[in-house]
Amino acid sequence: MGYLEDQVEKLEKRIQKIKANPDPTKPRSNILWYEAELEQRKAQMAGQQEGRPFALSSNSMHIILRALGFEILDMIRAADRIGPEKAPYYFDQVKRLGFPDFFCDRTIMCLPLLLEEGGFPRPKLVLAPQGECELSNFSSNTVAHLLDIPIFNINVPFEDDYKRHLGYVASQLEEFIAFAEEKVPGIKYDEDRLRGLVEVESEWYALNRQIYELTKRVPCPAHPQDVFRLPTFPSTFPNPGKIVEYVRGLRDELSAKVERGYSPVKEERLRLMWTTTGPYGSKIWDLLLERGVTVPYVQVGLTAKWYGVGGYAGMGDTTEYGRKLSPIEEVARSLLGNSFGSTAKRWIDQALVACRECKIDAIVNFDQEGCIPTIGFSRLLKDAAERELGIPTLTIVGRQQVHTKEDEEQLLQQVDEFVTGCSKRKGD
Image 1 (tube, rainbow, N blue to C red):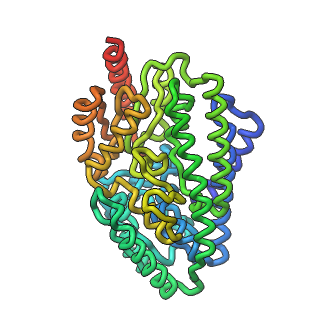
Image 2 (image 1 turned 45 degrees about the vertical axis):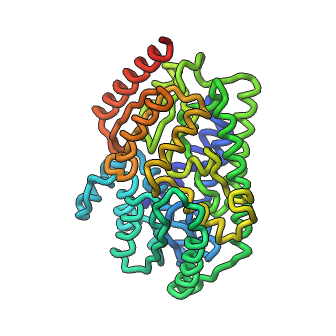
């Protein structure tokens, strides 16, 4: 059974299980998310059978690919869904293919997933915006090289003063549109379609910002694991409105919890900020709940922009540039807002603002092994948080999916000891 067929079967079983026996501790809106994913995988299967053109890029660029008429290959997200049981097999395939294994597992496991027989559809083109996660761009460039298909790189300047580069990035997107139309038969840019997608994602941004305001509340109404379910751009899915519906439902559920003073912990003793990524399949979230710990905020490359932390603007905002942006400029603004491809100062400033706004007591840096930007940021963030906020930081280097029983035991012990020390420190 290929990857897509396997995912369709899993999602259908999960949806049936939720409908038959819903878990009262989990958001009811989750079913909308799983339904959207199921529609996506079925659409990819249909596109593969019908020979429609697929393209590969980062999540923030799926919107421009949709406007061109491409089917979407969400390879990094697909690797996220492999699961800890099968992840070691795919990671071993990475080494068998001759690729280095010191990269983070989520950005490199997409290669065997794409190359194996019966795997993902083969893309006709790759769009690789530089200035985001370097390792995912390495994988994208590798895909283009191995399959001998066209690739277009977009340069996103490595600066904190990102606003002045809007026109520069937008002009490259216009060049990409002409490039894609020339290289892939049947592809044609539809500005009206892009404008409609921008309107959908503008609403999605607004809802995410309302969710952030709710998770800032004391006590935090969200389960740690739900907070870690990071937003995914609606344009990734064939039915973008379904994702907006899901986020709206989540917003409404959190709002109702706030009104009645609900928290997933009996007594909120500690509020953590978690950074970068987390171990899939781990029991760490259960441990945190048992210890009275909530996670109001997770810091990754785009969360500040998604949630409006520190004044970052989302799609549809007219204050950042003093005017309404064109659809292409809105896509460029999304690229410029990623702090994964920026300086340590930008990453740290965002984290410190979120710590203040969310009343964070401590930070856990879970750095992906081989993650070039964030491993370098970790020590700087730890020093800044202690110096400016007086809060401690635990730094862990691990993998998202490829981890052993011993890795899990060590992680639980480290976090448990850290939480114990932080609780005592807060009490003192």
